[in-house]
Image 1: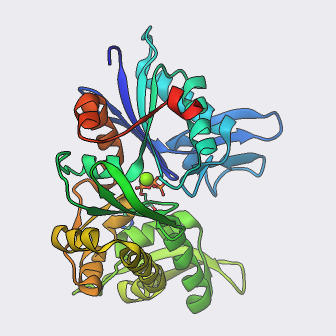
Image 2: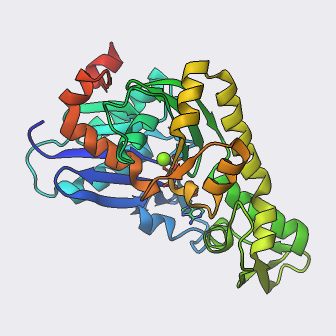
Length: 341
Ligand SMILES: Nc1ncnc2c1ncn2[C@@H]1O[C@H](COP(=O)(O)OP(=O)(O)OP(=O)(O)O)[C@@H](O)[C@H]1O
Ligand SMILES: [Mg+2]
């Protein structure tokens, strides 16, 4: 495709953009903040997300993607337009885009993504199933004829898909992912320590101490929260064993979701997965030991992709470069025209 070509992963927590010939050039929160007194936009992207919990009541933080699906069209368009202007600066040509979308989204939701991209300044737009781009971004060979299972643990959803010959044969989406793990930590601290913390603090605790299998060494950190009883600020200690306990249910639910897809997978594909193993992508897959936990429970090899949160954007970039070759190998993309019918 001539002109500037972009591979885009519209995620619940962040938008990642891959530019042909440059790699990942943008990774910012999918967020916008505005002043409800005059409807004026205050900040977009990571600058908006940083305002959470510290902003005055009149400033509202909007996250237009919920559970992997665009739920607020106009906020999404504002965010995309801002990012595209930031990247394209004074470019005359409209950029062509390959955008990854979770496979559970409906045609109507795909149209919303396309309209949002076009209103934001896109030229040609192609939509492709997220598990396929994630697998390509993780380095899966496109000539690969065998069945492969990709489990993408994002912020809003965990998407479990079986891919074979360029198409998604089976997939399911769970609402258990990074965001719900943050909530599980907040609930644990309230229940066991009478401490209230915001989601950003819970996320920091998850990144530092979170684990799906017990760590060899106990790590502890000191955080600040609010006493649930008195409402006063209170520093508190939290350690890895406690966070392990807080996240155990989320981790078990991910395992059960994978089991359910395995049970529905026909025998030939099932045996392919047993031989090839499972590929983990998405930022949530960086939870310490989740690959080891799943591998032990399933008795199958589970591999964490390198740079797991950027796999979908990198894969969309791969599609930009190899569209013809991929089509020849049975892969399909839905252009704007195809989605509109
Ligand atoms: N080291 C880590 N341990 C645990 N979780 C992590 C770690 N690093 C990142 N995460 C989590 O990964 C999630 C973000 O992953 P990702 O960027 O793949 O999500 P997304 O694409 O925005 O969401 P979705 O795919 O659900 O729409 C966040 O919940 C973040 O807290
Ligand atoms: Mg994602």
